[in-house]
Length: 298
Image (tube, rainbow, N blue to C red; front, side, top):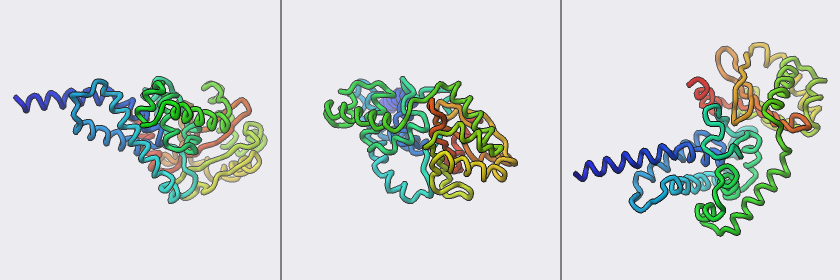
């Protein structure tokens, strides 16, 4: 009888965990900007859930979200050291949001590639507080309990994060306007059309190439309209002719998957405001591209 009770309890725990899983992944991914690391955190949360005395837990999702948030913060605190050994600019790993536009959240906040990239400038606790409030709409008191701090400090954490992000990023345009400008940019980049590139790029545009050390990826960001335009025009003749492009969705925004000889070589996404293209993000690291491409084809 005891074995049957234990099996029933584990079945119930599994159902509760699977129901919460998209929510947990959404928290971990936003805090870490990494699909692989978020999956590891969710797996760790599952192991802890299995070994927890669940009899006294009234809200399984709330408990699991707390565990996940703390695990993600702990891992994020080690990120600066890990980033030091990373070759070239680091960009978040893209996710396919076609089936889950909010990625397990009530709102799609802190999901855009550009926002996730900017969030790297926040400390891990600020990041978690911002994510739990803006994407998941947790009450400040609940966030304070999850992060083991006071409600007043939680409000300050979220406020500082909002101010930091709003100071460094202009309001984005609609998805339709975003795609239109990306189409113009892509055509100009493929042909090396300097005048069109200079027309769609903002004066302080930045191009990031995250290759993780692969050949052909710039190891430093390229900054400014003139430099970025000339950089794109210079590599256009050797980069684009052997490639094929596929329009996709990444992190809730239109993006372009670039392939050569049947292999994915880059995911191109841009951050667009009313001024034009504010940043260009090339995810070229095969380790980051592979999970995303697999999700597209699954």
